[in-house]
Amino acid sequence: MNNADSVAQAIFQGCGANLGPLIGTELESGAVSVEAVPEPPEGDLAVLTIGCEVEGESLPMLYLASPLSEIVTLARRMLNDEEPDKERDLSDKDLDSVGEVLNLMSGALDQVIREQVNPTLRVTPCPWWRTSVPGDNEFEEGNYQLATGSLSIDSGSTVQLLFRFPVELLKPASDREERRIQKQVLLLGLDDQLQQSLQPLLESAQHQVEAAEPGAEDIDEVYARSGTIILSGDGDGDRAFELCRRLRLGNATWSKTTILCMAEPTRNQVIRGIESGASHVLRIPTDDKTLLRVLKRARAGA
Image (cartoon, rainbow, N blue to C red; front, side):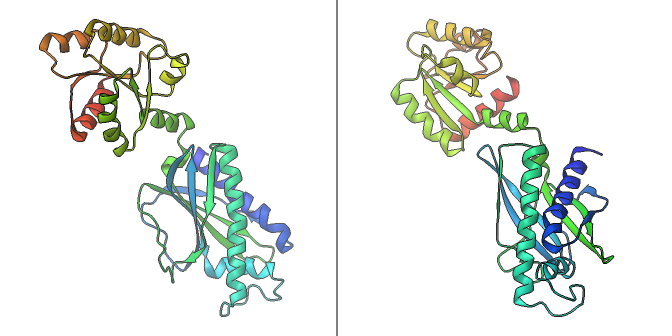
């Protein structure tokens, strides 16, 4: 059983464990299958959309769903209905109870993902909806996986459960941390004018920007949380080349993307900058497209 299978199995088992005591019967989780299905599930489904955030990064929406005609049998058991499996029109009480069932299931999902995937994950359930009357709701498109399982009731009936989730959800926390670091840019020892010209360009592209001096007391911590370091080669050029060399040889910075900014770089200065460890020498002033292209190219070759 791979990671996706085991997570889905635990979620569906948790759904049964949360619901069983409230309906007075034990719910047994059935076999689980997980496959890549980019298209949304079909049928008249009750759907709970769930917002998902990991370490401040929003992921695509998660979805818990079940055929409405099946999940309502659980909802009616919560209402102590004497004939929960009898087919009939849905009442307002039935529909309200379906929402309660889905919210209980989302509690199991929250617990399992935080325990088995990432303890920093936070989920936010949205109001439930049905695919036959979606209103403003819809399934997001993207690289989604669909887990299918079931809960068996003592009466012999079965309720199908669906969990639709983006592949990013199960990526290791280290991968997400690396992506976060790659979006963090350090402006190292830049004068105010250069800093003020670069910072808006970076922030408009959703980069997190921090400024620091090379001799700052906590500079190693700043280096550790930065993916790209931008420094100036103007003024005392020898000092900038030496700083590039120290960054390339430093334990905390040797793998970082380093961009050396110069107003009028000569061929010899560009060569010396690269030899000193700079990932790229950037002519300034620059524009947002050029800056982002340089970032991308420098990271690819860092």
